[in-house]
Image (cartoon, rainbow, N blue to C red; front, side, top):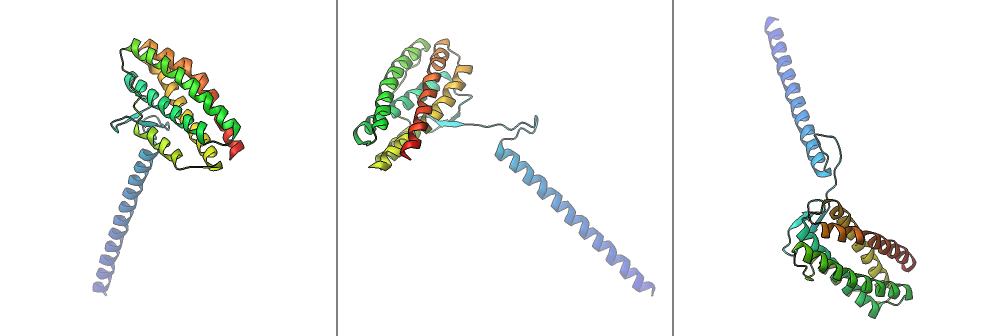
Length: 210
């Protein structure tokens, strides 16, 4: 009888140890998963605030965020975006079928050529060279439109214009607040209303040709 009780007690102790081990494993796994999720969503563990990071790609393929982009990188990126939008719009003038789309495309060519001149002036005052080299992320958009024809072309062009101006607005708004050079800051501030107007027009026209 004593032997039976002893074996029963040993069995109970082993079972208890097994449960404790299982609980520890579960807690560790849960904590790791939570930390991974917070990192993926950009949750600031110190403040509890959620952060969002938007990136762009330079001609060398390096990613930089909109908020920490220096003046020289901003000038290069803005010049590339201008060149891309002019190229897309010149293509649309030849291949688009909707009259409103063509009218919009001509406006973009005119406005962004003027913007390029203003950008060159700001770059000169900041001691930065503004190149018209199209960055990979902008070249990708040009290549996308090349594959479209007919009515689908109009819709794709307006969709790309909507995306391009949305990106421009985010970039220019950030630079208008953190530019180091006054000329760059003034250029960004002056361009924002026009970019917003272009974005609204692109959105409205895109809805009509959808």
